[in-house]
Image (cartoon, rainbow, N blue to C red):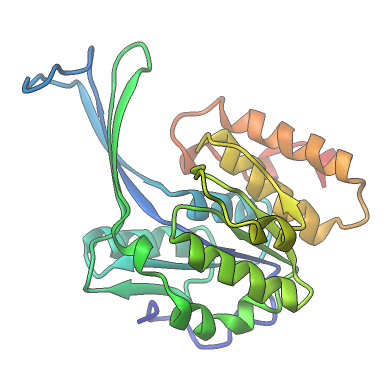
Amino acid sequence: MAASGEPTGQWQEEVAVAVVGSCMTDLVSLTSRLPNTGETIHGHKFFIGFGGKGANQCVQAARLGAKTSLVCKVGKDSFGNDYIENLKQNGISTEFTYQTEDAATGAASIIVNNEGQNIIVIVAGANLLLNTEDLKEAASVISRAKVMICQLEITPATSLEALTMAHSNGVKTLFNPAPAITDLDPQFYTLSDVFCCNESEGAGDSFVGALAFYLAYYPNLSFEEMLKRSNFIASVSVQAAGTQSSYPCKKDLPPTLF
């Protein structure tokens, strides 16, 4: 079921950037060194962050001023509830943020040492349950947005269906094929107006979210200029800690970008 507390149709006419993708809760432990197999060590800091490529990209677009909607699925658990609240605080429509009792909210357990090396275990959980029926329910947003973004942290078939739905309705499609897979369906190329390859979850997602913002709100800019501005915004994000917490807002950026 979709997240409650938001009037149906409130955002549909306003949404410029629709994102079909993932939400992940990051469980981060900082240690002086990485543990060996079977070893228990003490860390010096722990924090919980909000991640997932779909949500990250949506948050960056929203912080630049885009009217956004995230089509995703989280668990009916505390992490899922917290994620929905995080989206709302970023001004993102949660009308099509679904909750399920059949899987936990996607999570990434991350251990980082003093040198920045890490060990990461990802459990996609509810992300993999986003399906055809969910997309049909969200069709009004996907088919009317100016730009639709998707990635590969949900089931590839679901991403392909979202691209098909958007493309057939004249919506500009931005596809980020990450994490990379070896047997990518050729239809992904034909259905993507912009095929943006990157693997990094911080600066890369900031870049994609910024590019979607410019495609939606500044369509008369040259594509080269859009890329330059998006790259600048992504470069700002790497100067602060965290993932979504590092993404700049419009008010914190030079006016010449807008």
